[in-house]
Image 1 (cartoon, one colour):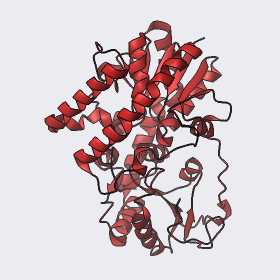
Image 2: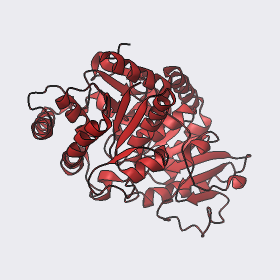
Image 3: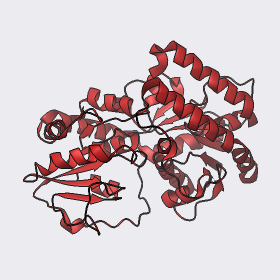
Image 4: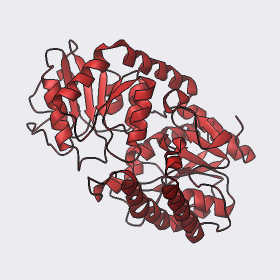
Length: 403
């Protein structure tokens, strides 16, 4: 049996896909350990997860990552610069010593490095260990910087400097794409063909598994006679989401004769009464919800185009209204619209009328639901966590996964 070390950033959406893969490997007799925030990993993977704490100071269960300190109006190349200079590079430098210690203490055979936990890739490369990329968003496969050569050159120089400081200065290649194996938690039916990653990419689809949760939900308040619409902006956008949630709630209340909404409202911006969802029968607002269980009942999702939420919705054949905010979200939103599985609206400018019209389209026009079901079938054929685990086993056995 082999030992797999998962290296993850303190971001819910980047830990969740790895949880199912790690569980599948453990069920097949392999040893699994993590490098990351212990509170966050154990909340998502279970209290018995073996976690080597990193970065220094981890333990509060952080989930917001770069969004917490970033000005909400930062967009485009400036947002990319902020992401790299204020989050990805400092995170890699902080995690690198912990990854080295964990590799040694755990005696890892294979490192599984999230694309945003660059220390995992660079340390494994330096130590000569086989390593796999965990691509928890498909945005990197599109090579969005191809049309911005100066930004691309800046990004490459940043990576070279990072490698010189924490990895093998003589190393080559992009640490976001393992030369051995890249696990893509989507399929071409949504993401399109990969412009980067080459023949190392394995399209495994979403990695979904039962999640430990203590979130209470008033299931008895759901009305089976109305369409259920879930509204969520993920875990990293509470700083900018209040106005959009209010407009979405207004749009859905205007359709209360045929639609019931569940709104994830971590900050209580909708002013719901205390208790599970307050007393509003039309818009149930809660700080957190059991998302996978709700998606099994939902008819539509309104979201920020976060990769996990999009893929989880489409796994259930649920079409989307996507309102991207930043980072990879515009790319994922474009994928949804191009695939016909949803409607894109402008996060900052869409009023209640525009949001409501988009919801009507995904609920009642045949194309979005048909496209969502097509993607759902492709996702299920791809194999999910079991398929990812098999690829990792082959990598551990031979040093390079073969399709």
